[in-house]
Structures are given as structure tokens and as C-alpha cells.
Length: 170
Image 1 (tube, rainbow, N blue to C red):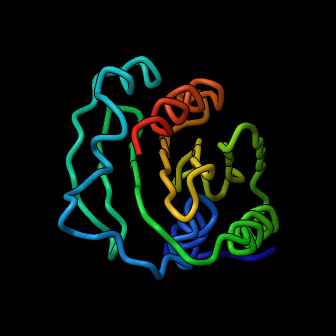
Image 2 (cartoon, rainbow, N blue to C red; image 1 turned 135 degrees about the horizontal axis):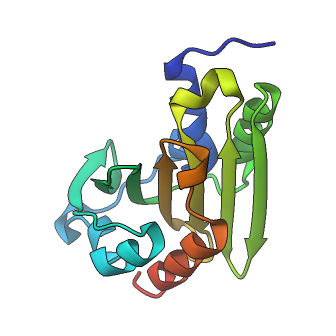
């Protein structure tokens, strides 16, 4: 069995959920950070069951908006990319499955959602629910919630409802 380091797992999660490794096109900085405008704090409170305050940021060319509750971290990403094949995401999903994670992926109506439950030895990495708006390629929006425990995971359907609202805002 592969024994990943934290950096490898984090990298794989980023690749799976957003294809950041393939994000080569730039989002014009003159438009400001759009990630925080894709979701409201009240919408997140309904999905998470707790209040969260969001703060804008960036990871390279990817605009981000992040927040935290007592039980989970939230990250919204907004970016453009040239490679829309989905190959990077599939490779990441396959790698996570090889590490022993339980992965469930559902795609419908231009939104791909995924849950990832790590094996017990990697539980400290968190339990993820992610939804990606793919219908507006080459622009993509991702909402990711990483819970500290499996019982605190946000159900895929609840996060999908937030992603559907995000899709109307860009």
C-alpha cells in the first residue's frame, strides 16, 4: 500500500477537485476576487449548520475564498483553465482510491460533486465533499468542505444546492 505524505495527499485533493495543476489561463486581476461573490455566508450556514466568515485570497491564478467552523474548513475557488479533458481529475481520483479512500462521484446538470472518505490511517487529512461547476468552461467554480470527522461531512446533495446557486453568479 502507498504511504503518502501530507503534501502528496493535499496535492491530489487539489488535482481531483479543481484541476489546479492544469490551470494555465489567467483570470484578469482587474475584475477583483470573484470567489467570495459566488456564495453567501447564509447559504454556507444552511449547508454547514454553522456560521462561517469568508476571507478572499488566491493560490497562484486561482481566486479563493476561505472560512472555517469548529468542525470543517470551506474553500471556494474560481479559475479558468485550458485543459478541460478531465484527465487530471480522473488520475487524481484513481490515485486517492489506490490509497484506500472511498470516493463517490456524481455528475449532473453541469455540476460534478464528490465525497472522499480516507482510510483510517489518513483520517487526519479530513473528510471531503466537493462540488465543481463545469458547465461554464473554461471558467470553473469549486466549493470544497473538509470536515474533521466523517460524521461532520456535508452531504453531497446539500453542497450541490450551493453549487447550483454559484453557477448562476458567473
